[in-house]
Length: 416
Image (cartoon, rainbow, N blue to C red; front, top):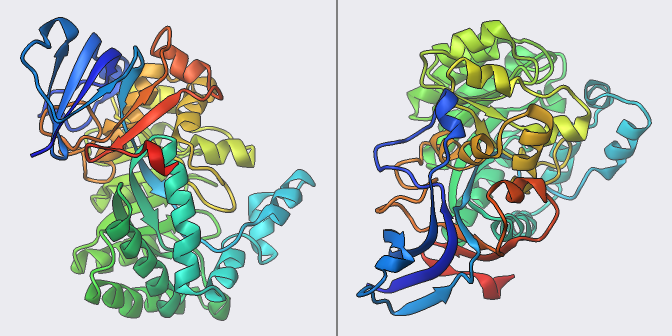
């Protein structure tokens, strides 16, 4: 088994014991680090680490000198839509001219625009475009990613998207999870017949997805102008019959009841939460459902930000994700997400790093193997240039600090 040694690490960041699968409340502000360190990888997994003074006797097939840079666990991005066709910069101009997200959607833009483009794009071309984005996020430090369908809105096109995600999962070096999001919007052909579209999702799409084993999770856009609580409950129940664990888009546009139905249905995560308040925080307390916050979407759309401080004060865990998509968050830069969490939601850098790593992995059901520097976990990490402090990583949010990326114990520097 190949052994890789990374030495002269200025600071090893994100150390966690094996049994910790998520971090809640005040604990999120306690970031375990080790100065002047080394890290040993055997095969694809972290074998050991320690102070440089204890390095004598540690041997390896390959050595990498971190030259005083810091080593972080890779980001775990639990909410993306990065399989899509083309771009939507015209809607960017519409927003500049004063149209809201809801107004653009009512005019046939938004999700339906992406659905039209995806329908006209081949599976091969979708894969090519998506892989450009995959390598982009890897270069920016992401090692685990969840990818949703939802720009198909027909059985055939939803399956096309999910097959592309499966191909990414098989060919890309990062860890991938797939989510079926047929209930992202009501397809044009079903305008005015939303109940019939929900029937299609439950009776045709979900069984077809399950037959091919294409998804890990089922998601619903449970929000004002999209799907109701009752429709959401029905779709999630149909998904559970086929082994798909629930996730929910909730409370982005209004307090929709999405958080409450997500908790009641055992959702792994409820995502967005820009309009969440005290009632939603109380619903989450005592549950195993992870609130996943997407500040990139609030930034791009000019919306209010989720109440991260209130959630943490209530003892909740919080995850951060990019929401990488063509309409409301056209970026998969998790480092920028971490900085936005501090700048706009007043999360400390330590809280934001935990939210973007271990808690992000938890929001995908992956925290036993990813999200922290822990012996036995998969060796997904990146090395920075030397920095004066961990906080500098969030503070200097546009300085190119990531120097080397390692996934499954293999350095990918030559790929970028």
